[in-house]
Length: 239
Ligand code: ZN
Image (cartoon, rainbow, N blue to C red; front, side):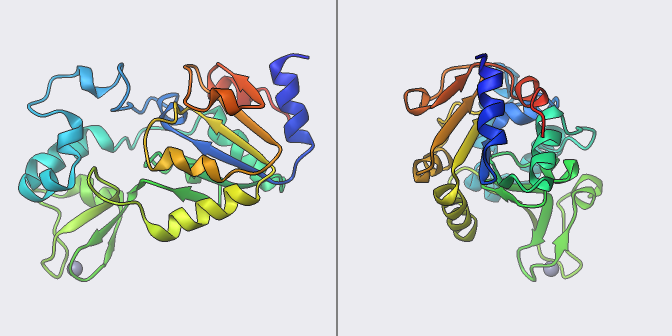
């Protein structure tokens, strides 16, 4: 049986699937992965992206942070790909319970997914640090100078920066969904970014499926390993 047929069989037999995705899901929509070797690290900046996207840098060099953030982290023209669409279909069919993502681009929601747990936040949400008023992505894109609330407070993206902790409530929900799932499909991630990658250790179900072009830290634990594009693989699945 081909690997796609094996995956089809696993998906067809389950109505309690959770998907756990990483940067590879977004790069197939043209969004750069700033951690990968092909990503932004090879571009020329005064500081490495990991420094710019840190809490300390945000506090001390806020203007430079937003300059980089607007140019590189917000991709308003990006559209969902075959992976996003298939996951939304699987949820609608009652087979998939949640999408857990390390991405911050909101593409799963754009594709129609309802239960999306964003471990690293979202560029679609921004909050005043003083009064907590909500601002959308276009407010940040269109702001001249530092994004500032009507109350005068600074508006900060709801994105988990380096040095910042993950949201507790989101982590608890992720742990709950993964620990109750009988199929966990991990896609487009090498499982090297912690603590997010550690969340898959909550899985107690029957089938762990890994779909990633490169080797991952959990290859040995997988029941099914497909070293291929997440969009191409999921695109071949019938709901
Ligand atoms: Zn405010």
